[in-house]
Length: 623
Image (cartoon, rainbow, N blue to C red; front, side, top):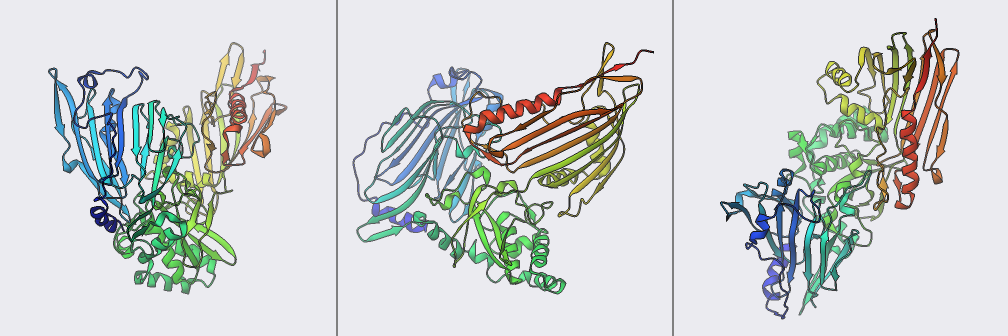
């Protein structure tokens, strides 16, 4: 597709139109003041600053050029020596590093060996650039050039931007879409030129979906190019067209044709069971023999799927397209679902873009019920999706149907804990804690547990992260049964929980503090709140006190509900004789909240944190 476009540049470039735009930065010509700069006056905490960025689409040559100049101000800022960007075309990249040596500017050119290009899918490239000899005080220049408009153009980064300018002149023969994201107002804006000056560094907010959805930037897609009988209709005109491209692409639709390497596994499963659902689960678990390499991709990593299967490692597409093919061999109606992972930003129904697609899962239909499957995570059961795939919606790719698929879940991070403890006269707690973890809580526990070489190493880490805890014995159940809750038991001895204050004893019944501080500290919130999935936690504590103590005061109970059943806290503490029982339950019933609900959430978490800090107060009886 893009080769045709590049060829067309020759003919199209014969049409010359006069445009004039003065560039705010000259590549390869830094000012001495840039090298002498020590801090950025508008943000003295900045580790680096984008001094200037200038993107310009030349309608005469049909080329886009992006020039960026960065100043390194602190040691942490040297990470900006590694720059990356996406391009839909083969791109020419140049760069320089400038340093002051004995008062003179010394320039070092970026070598081609420091420029890495990876074809992500269908001539969508990921470029990575590693500048050498970058240190505090350095100035970096990078300039890249490619045909047509860019895939994306950012005006905002994690560091402040002094000046960012984009110029894209309209062209009679070129039609493209432009999708805007972010909150930073433009200093200047017209139909062809956008300027943002003194842009603050982007600050991530707690429980935010993806920075990509909120950093100020444009995303572009070419719709069509037409000139004197030549008519190129780009695939981005509709999601249906994108589906057709994917079905015919050798690294996607072509990859699931004729895959004989799965025949033996399909035969094994067919002999094992005739139940379609059991066959689906067996296929899901079988494909997990391919270890995920951490790459989120829509296309396979090799020319054929069998390579990843044979090697036992592959990207997300290798794994899930292999699963799709195995399910089809088992006569289970299945289709791929393409999406943008959470870190890659949201898909738009109204702005179709193949550039936004970077992940694929599988939809299987059995007895009228749809199952969404992702086999990339070893410890995730078939009926849960990893968080990276929970990104509002994806799209089925099929010859017979094109439809949006919701990528949300009502499954929870659900866990319960029961403490049965005794407080000794010398203020040592002994007893047992049992717990049950379900769904995402079980997945996270399994992943953490199996990151250690064995249970002894796990327990050592547990004690290290729980000051005063000594594990006498432990037991874990269902670790290998992914569809069952993880159950654990610890027999513990805990010191330093009860505090002597004069003749009083202060004892916090939250032996494991769930939340040290309120994550929502800002006065106002710019972005919607995203918890990944709903949460439900409960803790019951039964505490037997020594006869030598008497209860002075107990924390007061509370019952809190968020509006529209968004969440709840139920907390009570009672006593019978010399025994105390605390029950604490809380939950977040929805995974997503709007900025208008921020103040309610903030106060909810304030109450949560305060209740955890309230002690039971005891007193030693007089002899």
